[in-house]
Image (cartoon, rainbow over all chains, first blue to last red; front, side, top):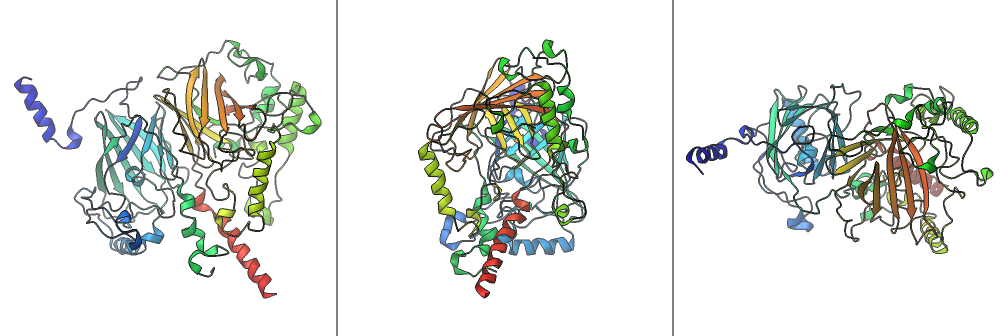
Length: 266
Length: 333
């Protein structure tokens, strides 16, 4: 290795994730190839902000369901909640084990689907990019054609995408106000607008960035970012995590003929 | 649901009146009526990755039932005139309730495009989706019939005890249209096929499940891993995607099947707007022989909308709370 190359390599290592100039493999139509099974390796689904480890909801399950610690994925770590919204976030946290949409196996919304502790798969074609998430069979299709307007609000929103160099930029609107960002009660309204950026940064990692804008909930836009890792196992494949039946006791337990735990039906 | 519910035109009927044009690539047995004349010279396009392009948004809604009506005996095909009359009959079977009535508050079939007469119905002269002179699902083997009866008996009298006593569809776990095999239902028989490098994804509107089918020659999952939708592997044979699915659970219960269900599906694009879907189902613990069917899938305007099922499952809550209320009433008497 000659000296200029070596110093370039050192420079690349010292640059922030986004500024690296990795050239991704191409699909046949010349776009960066994002096909594959990806997953975040962080604890953002427990809390997108920095947090210490904590006991879980079920003491009898001890370490298994404790909250793993994390350094957070929010840039600057502060979320600019409006005063009422901050109070609501605290209320959500207090009720997180019954009110979090994930506890009920509801569709997770965007961006949460990206960093849940389950893999997702990108199926890339020129006009449509489909993302299939293992959690709850959630899915979204990204329209790569002329952008279209969300016809109605939905759990996974309405996605229009375009390429900026090797970066897939996805504009997400039409999200209903029912999903949360994490198990810590961070939330948004139906005015949520998310702009996601998926940038290849090495053969097996993507940089994921999402700008969050919601004037009903936050005083200004804010940003999360994290790497996503490719599942390189030879036999990697999305399996079924159809959690609806795991949530039936929570959703309908009080309506059973013989309630479990002896409580009378309401 | 797509914008098609504004298109009250029954495309199938229109195309049935055009001349029979067997496409070169369509299997000879299908007797498909091509939607456009001159389709003989049509060559299916390739994706950017160089495999046959079967992508798009489709409906597999059909005027033809899975099993042949008994009065038709072994008559496998209609004449064009008979097929047209049959499609008209289906179109005119109004599943509509009187406007302004209680039923209308729940579902106005006409209004929301739930009625088959408002769907794009691909054209076919078949009398049943099941092919062959029998035209019906084979009778259950004695052991399979016993298995079915035992399941039903175990639930009898407990139908409303709790969520587990309700069917998988009502619980929003899996719907019968999802398959495989993927068969039309009364409404929203919509699906989208997206082709990535090395796999084909099929998204069915109901109930938002995606089948991701690798076409890379990888083997099936270990038999210990069971999936409600099974484990699908595909490969290309000429212009046809052939998909082999195993690893079903014993809860899938396709027409009485058990966990040994094995489904082979074929997807062949026969003209710009049509993918012919063919399937064979076998399960030696359920039927004495394999059986096959086919249904054309027709391109429709997208998009596929989000069918969030469990998130709005008032039916389950209402059924269970209704049963509890009825028990209270009985006890008070």
